[in-house]
Length: 363
Ligand code: ADP
Image 1: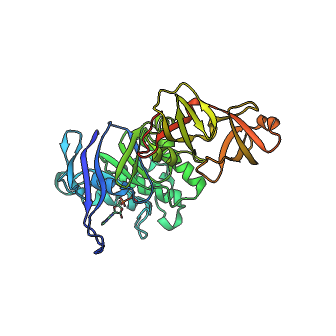
Image 2: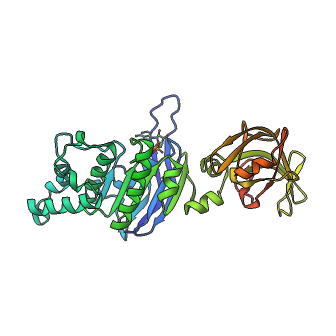
Image 3: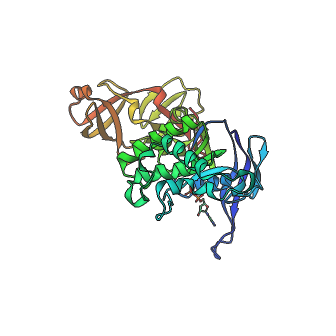
């Protein structure tokens, strides 16, 4: 099912008497989600992710704009008639019901021509349970399951109705690190095999990047960038996106463009740029450095952290805007390090230049 958001805005009235202005939780959001795609809505807490999901589910109505499922305008359609499957962070399973009863629960209250026999419901529950690989656990109660298994039951319960779209709100945040990794792969697999258009909300960039077809990066209700995960990482539209994506985080510097040459301090680090003269923000990914004793960019070496295959060189520079600079280089580079300084060549594709005031990408 194709899903379209058309200039969607959601405002909440202010609860704070001293600040009477309303909260704009989502501002002028337009997006076309292709049938069968998995979209990751990504951003820090308060950026409007959950509100967007609630607008899609019908739990909230937009202040302005329209929402379409396929060609159907669902903006005014109540949640129960939209055919959405919802999965929340806290699973919200019924503790006194078995796994099977939890999964069949959404099917029980169908009436009239949609009414199902017990046998049909059991078959549908089993089919969905197989899909999420919990068919061995049908008679257990939620308290007898691990967190990951409980989340699978919640996903099965959302899928059993054959929803038009599946909405997942931070579905992995209650799981420990290893289960989170496993379960996100699982979500991807389930999504692929059902082909159901899915919107996935997370504040965790790794999660969003690893399983999404498209990510939407939001801040303060505003969409900063929409794109394939790799494109957004490689070509961040602005400083916020550049800083939000990537671990270790991107390294930030004060820079200066003069006659097509980019300087950090007095060091010319990039040439032949068609940019106007002036101050800029420079952001360099940790993997954008190569150790070279005659390299153009020299920093003060602080320490080396061994990461196995790679090493992380921690250094400082007077024009760095962060506490330290982290560069990830191959472990062989350690041979070239001596003394209190370290010099680097910079990989041009890993150097991003942003306008000082607006934060917009220049290069
Ligand atoms: P996220 O899911 O990204 O953390 P939300 O969508 O929950 O963000 O919230 C976006 C903004 O809207 C926040 O500033 C939040 O405080 C505000 N907000 C959310 N729900 C309400 C509400 N019911 N009433 C007033 N403000 C709200």
